[in-house]
Image (cartoon, rainbow, N blue to C red; front, side, top):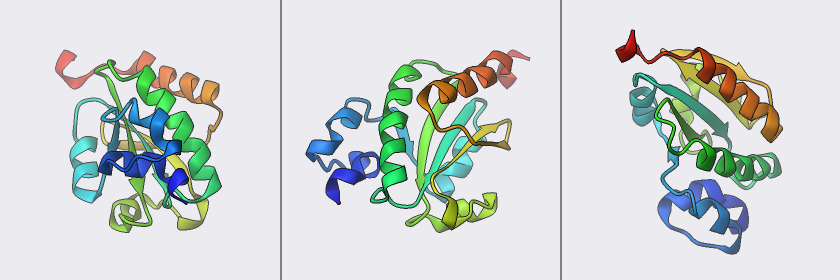
Length: 143
């Protein structure tokens, strides 16, 4: 099970064979709880969040690998941050956004405080999804 915990445990410093790829982008993926999620949503940038239920479930494990690659691609783009919320541990962070526990992982883009659900899962379609938001995003301080 520890090999499947790469995204969450990378934040806490656990190193197992399955985590080496995500550790290379440690800091690029923000691990959020309710207060930090609310603070990030309030920022004048895009926030792309993966709501997962622990990292032991196979769909979460596959997504965490993709999430690590996406985070490294957008690491230096000041317009967007990528984050994870573990709804198994941080249920209060998930409840306000009606993220149903049976449907993990769920992806959501926050823009100007509004939630936009993302149904894409393939890496290339996720890149297109992110780029479509970046193409239309003008930070509040540039208006």
